[in-house]
Length: 185
Image (cartoon, rainbow, N blue to C red; front, side):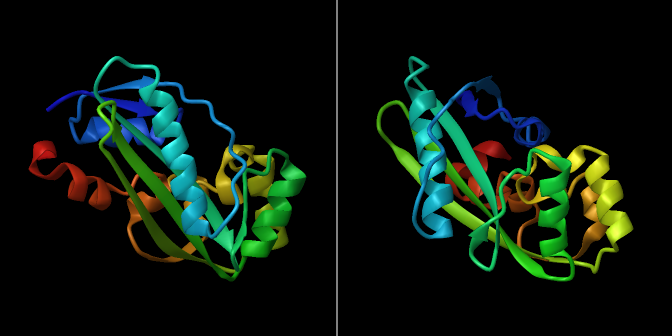
């Protein structure tokens, strides 16, 4: 299989590719993250921008990029950056179902491009204020969309998942397999 260039800083995406024994190299792909449109359009546009930026940095080959956003009632819940904003986001998610959406783009330098969008519904348990304050103080939610990491301590608040767990982690493996097929087996 031809090496893939992963246009992502996400350690989770790199870990998932490594687990699948897909040969890859991480490259940077800084893009303007201002987007408008439906949630699907936003995540796909961001993934396509990152893949295009990555393709400009390599001579030849495939670039894989993805972007994950959390939406509550259609409103994006970004990375909070501060404990105070994390607490606000967590309070809004407490006891509710929200959508995690990941757009993924696999682009070859010869112009071929495949874009997919996948989503999962996450239902949070009711969180106490003490739990929210303690989790926000841990620092973990500050750099995560929706103010939680399902693969870390934030997973204790998840009551139910409907959809692909790997979409929530930031790389929908089922969709990636649909593109790459048996080459990754």
